[in-house]
Image (cartoon, rainbow, N blue to C red; front, side, top):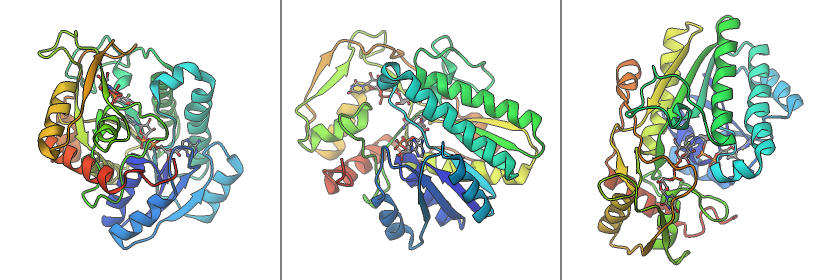
Length: 341
Ligand code: NAD
Ligand code: UFG
């Protein structure tokens, strides 16, 4: 089966391509490299001994999309391409809506015109909104997002649901990720943020490798056992495997419906626990200070992952120690990431 992976050079996309290739799929990757490196594909080839057809381009390029769907018989799409920095999205809302919403719209239109039957979308736990009680369950309504990034995820979920209802044989899977961390155990691919990392783990590993002096823990006065925020961190390889299982389920069902799954561990971990466990498993010090709260951060959320376990036969298998060791192996072996930032 030919699978089009948008955003395939990125963090989650590259790990998912490894799992798709290992499972026997043929992969066509489309990425404009705005937040990634083409070197990821060399590394993927090294890991899998298989190659990917890489097309450098933008999901908003309608002529390019038309050409791709004419040249390849695409059986399914996994759509990762998008901008993901929450803070930046508040400063540049139009850029985020254009890239994430208009871009997705272009892709969905082209997919429908080409009669692609399976569409898997990278959504986020952020769509539950601050009102939702934990653990988050897929039956809960979409919430309100406080930033354009989160709003774009809600909008694309809605566009896909309406499209699936109107178009025959368009099966949609919305995967709501919690907090992916870690890297492939080879240490060859991993998260390579451009500039100062927004997310916790790349910041922690960059402090440990000496690229940054210290971590700021955003908020030490939350109503949690140690005062720091709680999230559901899962290994990126578990997340990648979840995509393969979602695609397989979509192909099995072929029902033209929308399927929603949380991909998380079901376990909440605090920021301080992350730092302490990282120091224990790597024997590297991570100096930190407790800084003011970051605007928009929720106190604590984690997944109820039981639907994915029942419906996809998927569950997160790696431990927190595995995630942190693997994140460190990638950072230690590649102090400058892919070396292009
Ligand atoms: P990433 O930035 O590493 O990957 C995204 C990829 O998309 C990059 O390679 C980038 O170059 C590409 N891209 C962006 N805009 C594009 C466009 N217009 N055309 C073509 N390519 C484009 O991010 P990631 O962490 O791998 O995230 C993948 C997806 O998962 C994103 O949609 C993100 O919003 C979503 N997600 C990520 C997280 C997380 O914590 N990493 C959590 C929830 C959801
Ligand atoms: N944090 C710090 N210091 C840092 C970076 C983060 O203390 O330098 C803290 C944050 O305050 C938060 C926790 O670490 O408590 C995790 O923060 P991240 O930025 O790594 O992740 P978020 O939970 O804020 O957001 C992530 C993705 C979003 C996605 C969300 C839910 O970045 O795209 O998970 O899936 F929407």
